[in-house]
Length: 220
Image (cartoon, rainbow, N blue to C red; front, side, top):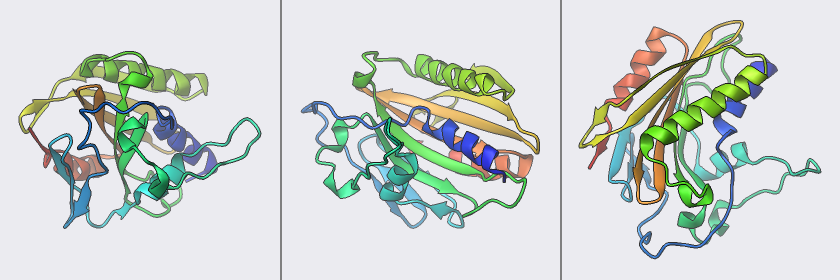
């Protein structure tokens, strides 16, 4: 995979990955990282669980934070120690899961992934419903790519059911020289939080593999 493609894919993941702090809502006492055990990620706050591919590379919360930390205006990167976050529920974005198929993707080949995070909508001053959240995120991301000269096709919004909840689903087809990458976003809301599952794939085999895990979602 070329450096240009790698940079664009990271930009896709990082567009809504900003770190900030605010005041904790007293109702958020159960908010936490969740757990990954025996191939299943579980998050008690959202009553959510999903099976993850055991042969993927699973990043720790610290590795995910390091991947998404951006330099300041002077080009300086200030590391964030995950153990020093005093109140996780007061963070704007919390990444729970980032799993990728390859440590480094083969040349001219996409690296399929699953990314799960939550956003505290208090920081945007908009308590979006799940449909508006997905549409706004997809449209903004597609605009960023199109401004960078990358062709993007946004597909119609869908509303699939998993467990006992209906999600909003948005999809984009992103054209690269070597392949077409598809990103799908699944989202639902709880209180002032949005739970988001992102998957990325580039061929029917990768899609079928990732769908087998999406279909394992359990949520109340």
